[in-house]
Image 1 (cartoon, rainbow, N blue to C red):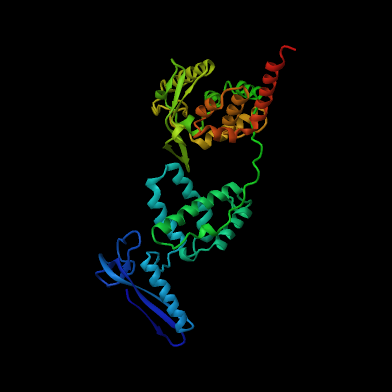
Image 2 (spheres, rainbow, N blue to C red):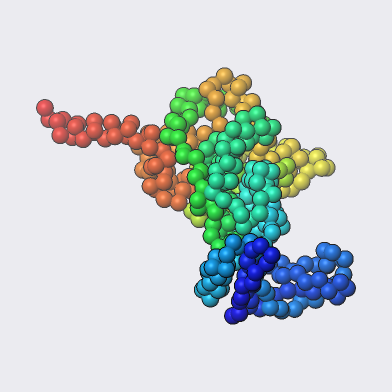
Length: 410
């Protein structure tokens, strides 16, 4: 490796050969472009054809006040190249890296729903605020400023801020992107490691319904077209996407079981099929007799809607639109909010039907492992952590039973 320093008019600079590198040269204007991650299609300057080549690459940096400073910097560069830690200087912006390089590169490696959430965070929360910063000059303080901005006015329209949980999701996406940039030799270190995402506040008490409230809700929506969906969600603990992705081939009414094999995930106004959220998400769920009858009624309703409907789409979904198409998850959430208002019950989210199912099951004394399997959680400990609010009632019951065993003879 060769390198030297030289004096400019009023400063010093170093020049060092950092080895061979892949490049492209334009056959028309002879301009050279270094290949970083993806080759160019045509010359950005003149539109000419490009041919791939390999050329020696140099690193040059000027502005040192003395020969000693330039020599010290040159020594650091030579050491970094020898240890394969050197990152070639680049003017690449964070916007260009995220949108043109990182997202296309990881798209095929992650779940579609995960990719869509990454795109949303990048396009809505990261690029509009710090997208013009150079990737290699990004700092922890700039990222902290982003988090502060999102906390103040990060929601759509800028009228209110993002919750700490949402900002931590942004942090996770940016951290993953910069970690990949380090692996791809775009960055020497991950600047997001120097940032401080907001702390999560102590978890608020989970909003669930009592058994009486849930029964009142199901009674109030008995005439609702989506009654079978609400009933199935409440009695199985399935996630919204899992229920909407349920097909008739997954339902065995004779043996009172259904199988969770896929989920419908929103991607804007489109919906995409995705694998269940966890490895244990592919599971079988036992059905009670009432739910079996409700699903039989759903099959009858769907056959009636199909009869004589020339526009019927045979999607195979258990819960669908009037023409057989898949229901959009966000539309279902909106329908649920309306049904709760009409039932005049305490406001809960659609996902809280799942929480209600788990809480009622644990309070009824069902073994946590069984509840965890029905919910498709990765571990039983996760189930107990999430639903720890139900544990005190279980402990009180346990204390009473133990005392009755010991002192029953008195």
